[in-house]
Image (tube, rainbow, N blue to C red; front, top):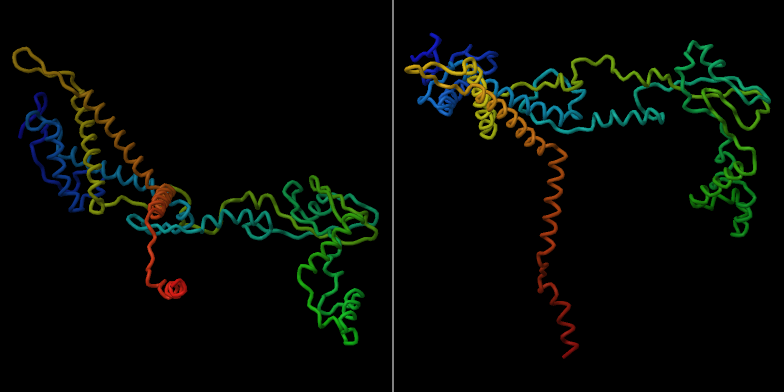
Length: 402
């Protein structure tokens, strides 16, 4: 086995056999495909660096470590992309088992969870509670402080309460409007008399009014109250309530409220071992067995760049070494290390650009473009028809012409 000029440390002999323990982390040490491809890579990389014309001041473990690093970096980039691209479908799912090499089916769970917050503000969903409270209304008094009258007596921080709905409305118009199926209004009775049905009891049983007529009459009653009367309303500023019109008798006013702390508490209690963010998405390193030729080619190129960086670091210990009669050989350590670092960065950028084109929104946009182009092309295809189907219509016309 050849040795370095200045040390007794063994260097690359031209071939090697992989054994478990030859890599720093041992992620793939017992993978037969890694063992086979690792040995092939070591020979290829050494020859790409000039062996056997020049010595390669590395050992077999350096090649295997670079190969392990390349596979791990490839897995990391792909897993990172998948975690980001599928995060909306993954959040809230169990972390119990790896999803590496498994299809992730998009779902609406997280979207519905996000949308439920809007429902919480409208009182039709969400993850915080709407509470009910009430205060006593006095005759001839319009102004009420809800913090003093309700929050503080019930041990609630006045700054933590937010009123969502106040039940201060006039009598609904619908209760003042008679049912057209059994109404006894004078107008309905006169209408029945004109039809000759006034002698029947009840006469309006024979009449079915259209629904829009009910809606128009209800709206007319409500507009009448709003314009011609002192309408029911209120002002609420900083939990100070002013009600209209001026109350004429004591009563109980009900309202609904939320606690601001409930809304701001975004942590979901009681749920553990679920995906929360990119830190605990259960993606793991994929064996090279499941990586196709595209990925393997990238791995080989990245591992070669890592070997260049390592070899450059070794050679940069000395600017030159003695050779022959008072001569020196200048080493390329610094240049080789810089070349390896730049190649690694370029390969990562290239892989990220490729992955970026595989985002779900990008794929859907491409599919839409293809669909539009296909429809445009099909529009140019002549539309044919079978003339035999027109013979029964053509023959009578020919007979008339003749």
